[in-house]
Length: 289
Image (cartoon, one colour):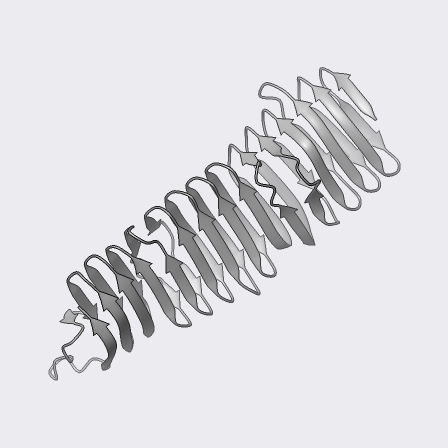
């Protein structure tokens, strides 16, 4: 069905396939599955409600996009979803797959689903609530917050990577071509790996907690854990590591390196803790400085 007008408001008692051309705020409601494509120009918003699965074709929305779907959310191959404003997808218990390479989200993308796979050809700001393994990839800078209650999280950034308050029950894997930093605590239940070759990695909030082994590759690296920490390094710059519990460090660094198993002592990685401080012993593997 082709629909053209200023503001489009449509409700269908069954499944609906619609192509829109609108210039004002529009609303589409389907009592069955929904497939939508077209354009909503200017700063106009588009609100979508599906009673089943939802499929995006080539769709451009100048303002905000919101979708409520009790079924899986996907997009047709070789199409792009372009949204100028914020994007909100509520598909609790379902898979959301918006991973086409030409997608472009201009504002915050908020997704609540069972699993999430989102890709943006440019910078991406994402807030996730997911019940299983998920992935987020940005062609530019990446900012991500949220909670993965089961499974792993894979992140890819084509620029700076900024991590807000983020909790992952399983493993976290981040690959970034730019510097890595954080604005909120990072809580990881499994292993964590950060690959940012030639870039600084600064994950130093006191509330950080890494439940598994941590592997970091970068230039200057600063890392803090509110508990015990097992770390493998590949650093081309200075490195500082702080753990409130036992500290084990291995790997290779070419800059100055210090390890802190328990404050206030700051120790080089090849020096044992002072007996007077009685911190938990730092197990240092093959850290070549």
